Image 1 (cartoon, helix red, strand yellow):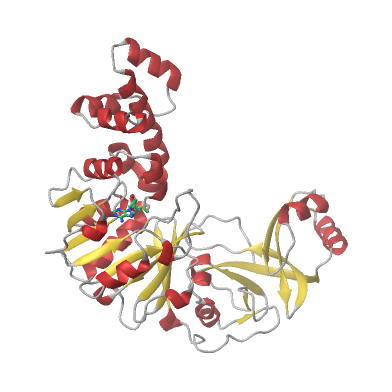
Image 2: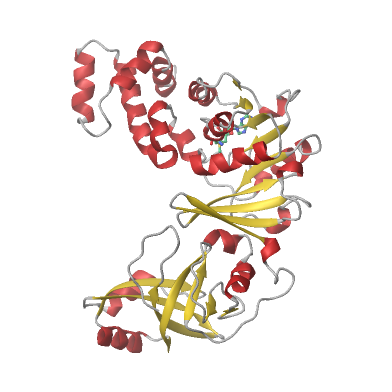
Length: 409
Ligand SMILES: C[S@@+](CC[C@H](N)C(=O)[O-])C[C@H]1O[C@@H](n2cnc3c(N)ncnc32)[C@H](O)[C@@H]1O
């Protein structure tokens, strides 16, 4: 028996199906059940109606990744979940353009998040996926690009004749749907990308938690965060890697992007200095931490770590860095529930942001036990300072690209 999701997708992928989808009211404006009933009463095939309503819901969800482009795209639920969001896909595509590669294969293209960005920057694209409905959706999403082709086949069998560079975003779920962190177990595995890289430059997406030792020699590894969440790492070979850069981080926030390279980290081969808490505390972005580039933040601030094993940087200087969130430190207390509660009461703190690194404290449990009340707002940073569990009472500094409450310093 045919999979109803596949039958529905086939129905949407017809001129009449696409016309019905595009004629639907904005998602959420009319109750889905009422709308479905109305469309069926008008004589539309129930399978098509269900599939069109599913696409309408997925398009609404996809706006978080693709903005208004989502309104012209098709999705599968799994394909949307795995798709690269547009600002990140555009950065991938830009690498190929900057390397002068004109024809790119996207091997394991999913619904075409990356492939659309590659095609959108004017590159010729060969997009390949072994999953039939997914490849059909990718073809629909690439329909406006005359120089993009989609093939449904296993990428290990793809003929790459005429292809200048390859992008891979391997599937990172096992048969039971669990996340696979090790790129050697992804589909296709990292070894496949390494093999392709002998012939032409390759970019491959991996989980942000990748062991640095697995990055092939001579490749650039770049970690990316979007609005504070680390979304990926990508490994770049040959002309796609920037000369002399082995590790880098991109911090995308509010539409702007800042890049930190290991060339800016004077402590790459040594340990950054450690010292007492100064007037300000800085929390490096997660992509910077994953890339092992906290030393670059230390250097930019002319600062020091509060503890050798913890990624908090302190400095007297007040600087607005895109790669770190800054705080004014008002007090450093030895950590203990009672003194912290007393101090927050004295200050009238009713709204508290709890940050922690290097401590087992459960923030929500702590918040409950602090029984906060009052009109003031504060940030408490729980961490080790020179080996001692400490609580740093702070206020937020503005971060470029992010709205923050006023904070003096
Ligand atoms: C993470 S998704 C790609 C998402 C895509 N970059 C995007 O932005 O939409 C990985 C895709 O690789 C496909 N895939 C995994 N192994 C494959 C193989 N050996 N041959 C072809 N496709 C494969 C899966 O079907 C899945 O659609």
